[in-house]
Image (cartoon, rainbow, N blue to C red; front, side, top):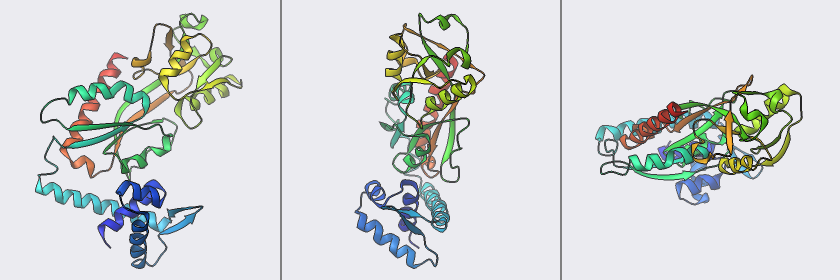
Length: 303
């Protein structure tokens, strides 16, 4: 088996299509298919199967892909022994993050790293559902991800997880709302309100479903908006209430809204850094990860 064939199999498992693998590796789809066919000839059990128009891994294929990840990581260890690549803090590092985290940490991170000898950082925002964050590690060195406490854990056999924060989502109320004078609110307090919330599959929508279950009221969802700055602006108009993160919402808050804890429901989300294990063997990547840990710790202290 060739290492690059195992890498292709691994990327197919993460990205879900031959075209996505080709785009990520900057090769043609036919080249990807050819390497997968060569790998299949060396294995007695099917490694892939058709699912609609996509080619996906079988259970045996996933086992081999996971084993291949260990091989790739071992090769990274070998490169580390040379030292030239992994030992430099000034290398390029790609980082993506979901919108609210990006608003809170990207600018401070860029300021910290704006000095000689620091990593050259490339930033991107990615607005994806929770289950899609791990696959982004195929394209980025570091991925800022979030998931609710009750959601499935990240696949630790495929990605390394660095915890950054355990952040509550608070109820955002217009400053003149009758509930704004309370120290905290309950599901019964807000169950009958008009809401702005996220699209299904994103964390605020999950919390609102819990509010509906506890209050026994069908939620009155007026707007579905994923961008927290837009949510904050709509709440400030006085027509709706919403949910905003306690630590990372600072850049979008304004005097027209107040945040109040929601009692009786777990609203916490985990903000984590996800990375391929071999990427964390590079000093430039660990420098960025350590900087993000410091920035997030400061936001938690302020909150």
